[in-house]
Length: 278
Ligand SMILES: C[S@@+](CC[C@H](N)C(=O)[O-])C[C@H]1O[C@@H](n2cnc3c(N)ncnc32)[C@H](O)[C@@H]1O
Image (tube, rainbow, N blue to C red; front, side, top):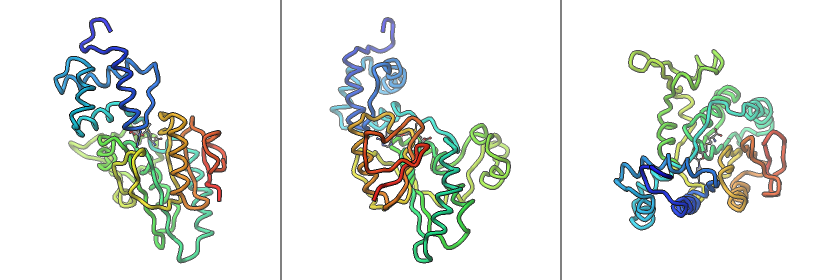
């Protein structure tokens, strides 16, 4: 790029693509060159590098885990919102949870949910709202595990404090019940209610690594995450989801994601919802 602040060759772009793919499974498309330049420029500036080649050398040889994590954080896409793809939450509230309430006996009132790639937390908090609204107040042992690879978004998720703009479209009763409005210096911000926060454990986890939890999970939300992975990586991941899901457990994927020709371990229920086959 003529006149650019940092030297960035085609070879450097290929190298960045290789590193992010090795570390996070993310496949950057050909057209992402400019995005890579703009997102990583800040890192080069902060670390005092003039050329991407030197920055990549540093990433690959220094063993500096903090910089590797900043590199990954800069390249992940974290777009999310409360009740994104609202049909999933309607299905959860109107079909899935009522079915579980009917079918589970007194000694099997345990529900485990994993929000994999939870970004800034809107997804697990939306799940928590539905659980609190639909399940009886007592007698159920319910937990949500929310994980992401990006340490920055996870910190926001754990804080559970959002700009008013991000919740303004929720219904008035939901806003009143599940969010505390900030005052004075915190005006314009909301904090999620402790009753939601209590249901969720946040953990940093790279989906490409070994998973420390044993499961089984009843539900896995992995939405708008595998869209950035290539097919072989998706295949491995969905096999692992099938293994860690309970029999007949449910998997929710994003609107442009599909398991068609990726795995046969799930049956489609429609609207990007799948059920593990026996
Ligand atoms: C677009 S957001 C999706 C957020 C939410 N699930 C939703 O649908 O609104 C994708 C998230 O996946 C995370 N991610 C990408 N690669 C990952 C990996 N290898 N392991 C864990 N999380 C990853 C990113 O950090 C990002 O926060």
